[in-house]
Image (tube, rainbow, N blue to C red; front, side, top):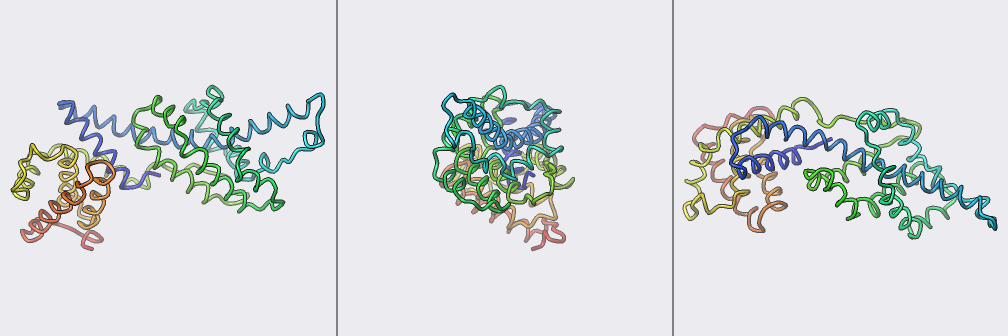
Length: 312
């Protein structure tokens, strides 16, 4: 499921898109934001689905080898440990997983098998695969560890797959690292003999509401927030501050004033980390300084209205 940091990233991107397009169509961008997050589930399922598809290719190769005119002993009696991997069986037999694929027409790997076949070709030549196949142990934990290794080494860093997903949906470019972590965690949480059930994209309704509230309240209060920022950047005119840095600062201010249950320190730390990933090398330090000054002014002026965990 999507976490708060990635929610903030998606909102930041939508605020930036609205600003740079000089559009005032808030509803249109809001709908794009919601759809962008919901489509992440398609990416998650497609990434997960690469694993049973690799198994299908392995099964096909076994059948081809058995039919060789001069089939060897190994061809006739192949090592079936990989195709009998319990994790892959859970994915293939998951009603939740397979139903989602059918309902959303996610049959990509039958149409684009070349990507999966390339992964398979690299996998069977790897040390990871050879060690796994040679080990006679067939425990569920070993199967999980192996599949996590397959995903981490051959699927997550695959640049051709990343290019393919970018062509399908431009908003997936920044989602891939998050979704890769999501897939690995999902595999690690699997239990033997317990069917995989797809969870929700949002942790709860509060997170779903947080997306739209943060977007709307940041966009609708930009002018007001800019006045507070001007007072804290005496050596910088607002038009000299990088657009992305300005958006990140505004989002931080928005959380200070409109989300009473979020601690100010948590907001500042989150936006520092986002700035490190998406803005300039010095942005984190700059944003930290500005938000810290604004937070202290709000606190001394009684403008913060934090409650519960927001007071931490």
